[in-house]
Length: 104
Image (cartoon, rainbow, N blue to C red):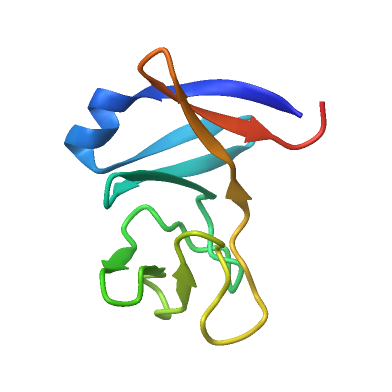
């Protein structure tokens, strides 16, 4: 698997979230509770973009703004059923957020 650099950490900390293009897809990068999370920017329910999702501190989850499906930040697992977000592993290197791509 290959790692690819994305946004500068300082920008993500300042903006809290950003969308990063990845081929034909987009990755939603989140800075929350001193951690970085990366998901494909689409809900598995109906493919709605998650860039305006709502974070829930109590559940440590994010909710799709279309139908409020909630997903765990760490795993991407849906709290309502067996669906899950596509999650990318992240690391910090050279003041950037890197995501691990499948394959390679």
